[in-house]
Image 1 (cartoon, rainbow, N blue to C red):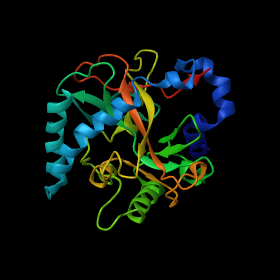
Image 2: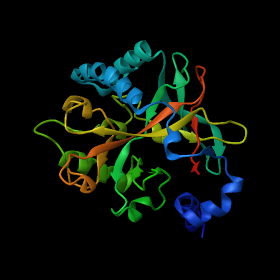
Image 3: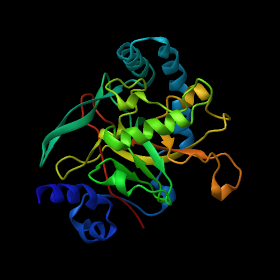
Image 4: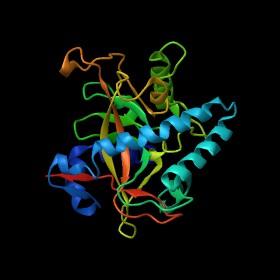
Length: 273
């Protein structure tokens, strides 16, 4: 019985009838239209990545991934004025203290890109039920796309398989290091950002950003640092016929100034009227 309850407690946040009945008891972020769900223009998020990623990529020549991560922490601190890292959360739940994400080495100005939510991208018509069982890391976008950010079990195996499938020559087209202890892109930790509570309000919000995969904006080396890969092997968008698909990124953008050593908190529920 306990196992069944645990699975239900994990799944219920994706069961629409349960969400509708319990919204009054949930902390949520409310926007009036889908367009107003943007904290900053998408171009600002893309420009920030285009400034950072070339410097992260230069450090990939280090053989030791721990050294690469440390060097890229320094890059992020120098260029952004802060960095982020995982650590024991300040929040407690039924299972005790979990993992959270914290601001280090500076403070975050309002409207800054703080982190990215990694994982496998599932279009609305693609199967995700099996992967979602007991999985608290499923992110649902406004248009029905899902991102599976779990870094263990079947979710991990599927993501690795998709990344290896989409290799171009000897180059990866997505980041694999977020599945490990040492992220070469320090921002790829957004799945561990916890939900706000009544005593601790959110300081970041999720923003959906699409990235062209045709090389017009992000070159292949830079794509290899982005933490998302499509479940499908189809490289075109069916809605746009033969046009090259765009990769969905989930950016976590600060909605207030965030002091150093503060835990990053989001709102898992955004209501669009």
